[in-house]
Image 1 (spheres, rainbow over the protein chains, first blue to last red):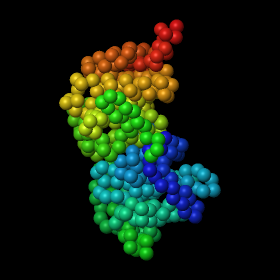
Image 2: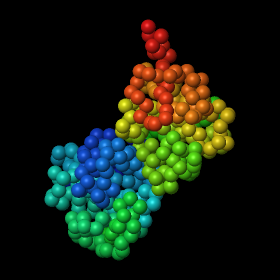
Image 3: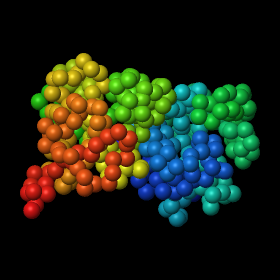
Image 4: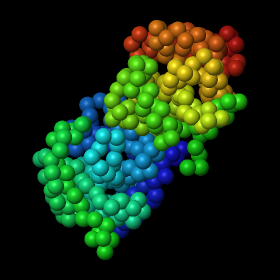
Length: 176
Length: 177
């Protein structure tokens, strides 16, 4: 059953593809790990985490874009997610990423986020992109800055409360 | 997008819900009619809920169909097996988004098509419906669809409701006896 029109993107080490049922388990594990998943709202119950997964699939169907599953080419296993997120109530389309615990420290998030950003500008035709980061998530802030994004403002996210909005360089700069 | 589910009846088209159904569904979830679905809720929560209904198709391979009128194309409701995490089994559900669509047999027509698909195409033996004890219309429709009160399945996971079970032809306990 494929309801998502997610394209299949590649980088040197990664495949980015639409969400599939087998991704639900590793993602649920991540979402229930509150220390790591605060930037995604943080969930306490399997049912809520499952609903987030279903929400992402619906997001693809309703918006035409969403979170890709990041797969390692060599291992063929899901290593995280990265994509463009813009559910109802969001300030504007966001470039998001997360790498599951055992895959951290290998530059996977950076490699995936760069590819997704190019896709957002080239294929979706977006003119600007933000990344919304919860205060204190120093890893994500460091990556946003390495990607060339800069802090713009702090706003109230309906789900996560106080949230930092970083803005990425635009299509001209990214696509050269 | 080649595998989009699609059913047709005399007056209705049933297909996986999409952006076209969003206004009608958000309006429904924001109204008092959505009490059994956790409503009435704000647009943000409604969008999340609706989006998760859509996503269930990929996770389970089945889900809610949007019900649209053939003539006008307008969305009038949803029907199909709903199966969130926490439900022991899929639950055949239906709703009409607005009172203006009631009393015309639309829900029955949609449910009959969905049940036929579940039993004949997908080979399910039975499917449960959880019905709010205060919802006389839904209870009456469940009975007209051939469902009967069910005490065999897991207890109804929702408060204030009763379980009814629909059986595929020849698969009811009597027929199998």
